[in-house]
Image 1 (cartoon, rainbow, N blue to C red):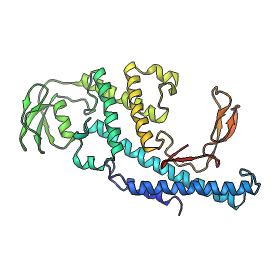
Image 2 (image 1 turned 135 degrees about the vertical axis):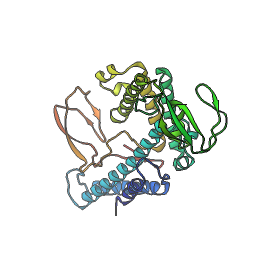
Image 3 (image 1 turned 45 degrees about the vertical axis):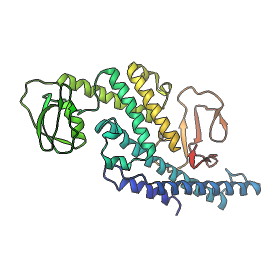
Length: 330
């Protein structure tokens, strides 16, 4: 059945624990691409057959037309499933940098084993963007987002930690099962990796509400800036002018660095990830032009002008999809 491979790929991802990665299913991923290749060749074959018979591809509703449509919809479904698989895994990889650590070696060995080579590279590039942004705003953003009532916490060591660990103000050894009072910011990376656990809050009178609130504000704005790259566009000029005005210079730089990481990853997996993740029920949509658009815009197979209301295709039958080196692109 056409489209089954893509369904199995998405099902494989969904069968894992939420927020956790299973090993990248290269075999099923490649089989889905191979099925897309078969659909593409069958579409082209049926279209050539209709053209040789002197039939208008768009207007004739014969068996070949509907056969090509079935293959086209199967191809689009598989393509959406491929994008959903890679996109959702990229979401988890990106969150690992915020929750666990900014170095690939900070990740537990079982997580590292489940990442593909391209996902590891994306993790590193995204971490570079985060570290650059944090360094310039002067705030560590990958810490607990709940403003702490006390800067110190009591912890117990539950995992193996190297000796002579440099904390913010001293060098300390952490034998297993030992208990310590540490600054929350020093302990959080080890708590995230499961090497320490918080026991109780201390009775210290110092509070860090202001610093915590600033961190929450910066972190939440960084979340929105990051999502803009996925939802709106990967270039700063793609953003509406009112949004650009609301970004600080450092946020714009973070947007650019994060976009570079996304484009590098998409270029190597060969899939555009910053598109709608919901498979379309119909290849045609009706749109209304609400802004100024240049004339003679090149669509999938023709050059079009845009009057006020026009019915166009988001995924036309004559998409002219090209298959390059095992990768699909519009």
